[in-house]
Image (cartoon, rainbow, N blue to C red; front, side, top):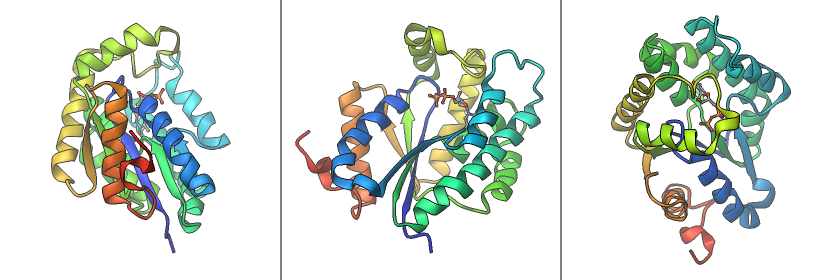
Length: 221
Ligand code: TYD
């Protein structure tokens, strides 16, 4: 029985999603302790981190788009089996930085190999394991890219260097996912200052997952 909950964090590059996730963890950790599991894709274990290195290596310019999609899905499969599923069986709250929606948006729409095809291939990889809640950190693709160029010069990866048109397709796909799955995916306005982004995300988590997240994050904001 998967009694825990899976919350995924999604958004275009430069949305500040990872900074928000770190701040959310800092707020929730004191209340949840061992009930909180924080992880990321691609990665989360030795095999998936090794796959991550191959995918994001800027020198791998010969990588085929379908190869890329399959590698993300392979990393995801291993991550589910080794990390996510055991945590959900153990009644834990899993916060995961990116999941299937990233593949649908980046590979399906960004690379143009088909959102439905990538979704279907991921159904095989995940055996249907869906997030209970997805926070979508929404920021305009151009604003996101600008943030990356200003703050992360030394850690720009193979996907960050894609053209604005690629990132616009990614964002448009995310907005379609948001419209198609209103119960699962909730929008966070990531153009706000970080503390407001975190407050909004925690409010959504409290309303959707009251067994894990107290309203107002359990503290003064
Ligand atoms: P990362 O450095 O973790 O970026 P971010 O902090 O923006 O999450 O790199 C992950 C990159 O991989 C990011 O550009 C999105 C991309 N990605 C996909 O294209 N497909 C996927 O399925 C996943 C999980 C990530």
